[in-house]
Length: 421
Image (tube, rainbow, N blue to C red; front, side, top):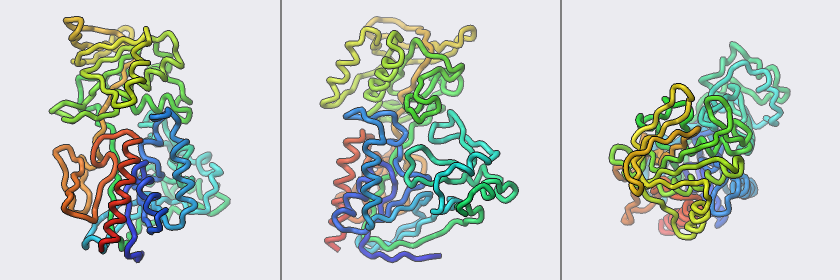
């Protein structure tokens, strides 16, 4: 076991947009920061988006600026493939143990891709939600930070293969790397552990995994992205053809006592945005939006009005009861109520997109430390306690702008703990 001593520093857990913001804001005021991320690359869910509000810019815009700020600031030490195992102590003086999992690729890596070219093993690409594959040794994605390859230890054949080791001219691959545990001394902790898309398989009536042309809203983001599985082309998963009719199913899991009881806040705006993706690629495509309520907070109402003015987009107020597949044509059959029109609708479309909700990562596994959670796994901050805080979507569903603002506030709280100790 190795030990890192930096009494008075700040630990930020989670390298998404909230964690990056918290770490940078704290470091740029002079505090040492440890930023840890459980995946091979920083960026979180924002890195998987095609565009995000308010400017509808690609993630390369905001994330690259943050990466540059981290590169230039020696007060930020970042660790990937790392997870907090335990926290003990008191505000101003915490001892944290962190498990660092092996990457099997060291800092000699030049991203030459020689290892990937010879690797014989393929694995599902989790960055693209399994819609394509990578080799067992791979670059997480085109704007990965750190820009370094990684080996999937579960997929790799190890020493029984070794082709990547032979191909690497820079001695960057070490198949004998082992997990490492480090101990950090910190004054405060900020959990920015983010969110996961709600598992659509839990909603059998909506056809995910059963109907071939049903996807989630995050899968749509990857289809539309230039670095996605189809190079930015939105297609039907079943045959790769262009969809001429698309249904967006709102509140897929959200506002449902059997799934997520709360509104996930961003789902309506995500669907409106994705409707513009479709319109750009397929000007004549017909789009149907099935909704319970339309929510476009604040200034986003103008964007909603723009989408509503499109004569090829039809909004249908009513909950979708079931989605099936036409056995003859392969089309998606959406069965829903139509509150304004009366009666039931059986609409056939080429593609259905489920607006799955935002579920905190803490819903499935709780974090070390004295934390309180609500019934959905969202972290509750107790104003009477100090030292351990939460930021961004670990506390509540939020868009990027809101998450960044909240992360800045969390950095300030973490700093105040240091001042008071």
